[in-house]
Image 1 (spheres, rainbow over the protein chains, first blue to last red):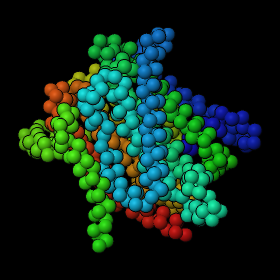
Image 2: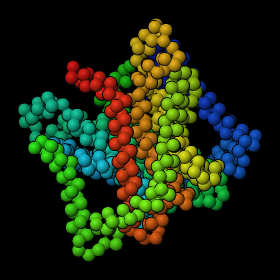
Image 3: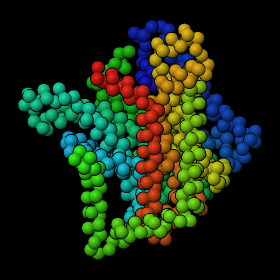
Image 4: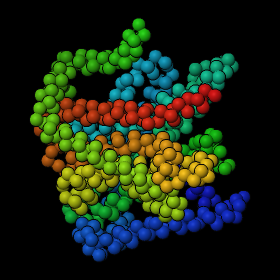
Length: 280
Length: 257
């Protein structure tokens, strides 16, 4: 979270900032760029010097060239689309289910206590354990991916929503009651704003997990998407192509992180944790 | 009475769920869902015996070696990178990228580089689990209280003593948050590396059952993975409570004030 502010602070025109800091920011970014370049050069040199056979680890330039070629292919974008579709649908289903369940369970002390043991037991079950079941039920269709993604992402969000609902300030809640706010109104104006920061943390974590599971399902089960393309490229001996696809999944991961942090910042712009960061 | 009530809360819902499961499989047998009794029977048959030593123990061993190595690498690297400002600025964007690569795609890559061996599976687990620990340690080291940091400087505490008594304790809540993420990631990677490329291990066995339509056996494998996950989460919670006792105590005092 704090790193977000730093980068955005660097991008914003430093009008009110003291001069020393304005000069400092570009150095940091230059160093970061140097780090990336250094990594790429090392990668380029390892196969060129013969430390690892170029058949197994092609030099960086070749892989990046393959990635650029991929960018021009429709098939590549279709795969990306399939992966993102599974990611998005799975995430949406998981978040809506978890929010619904979280608010229902969280609003009643009895339900919270009664479900605690079951939640604590089901949550750590690795969703990959469900892969055989998904294959059996749905085969290589997108439903398999959705099942895994939803299971994995659901618990991340549910736990956060439960924490959030439990965090409601009793004084605020009683005040709302005294002013005659009904149950729905209290949920809307007291519980929901309290739980929102927790919910957004949960969604951010769930978004990462959902991508991991989407790729996993494609890789292991063979449902259409980038993961399957990677497995195909590997077994077909298209090594540069495989590394290029791996790079592409990394870029998607970065994009999802940036997107989620942006959404979190926008939806919580009123919240003190975000506001104080902006001021400092 | 109070104990009874707690017990009721803990067992009530699970018992109810098992009853529903039992009742729904009572009538016509469903191909995909075994009855509770047959699952328990198969579970004992399949997993208590030779398979425990040939499949379960090696898998768990690989998982432990991988996770422990990832934690050590992550913490040592994190303390190093977190304490040196220019090094952090140099490496952070690259590390962020590596963290964003979904770890399962490393399975085919490492298969290519190392072949299908036990050490390949361990390296898969390490290279997936190291990022949450590493990046959280960097964050934790960076967020060390500046007053405490200055005090240790003033008292001439430096080198290993500074790391041991200032940096590690104050970063430990963050480090453990990273460890928690990498534990569940490690379990996932263990299973995937075995499903994708292996002739033994838990993941391989379960897929084998599924391919031969041995449905109760497959379910029993899912249960084993579930128990493994639950067991790891309990051990972690116990360890966290012990390591972070001071931290939780401090939080309670702060919240009470």
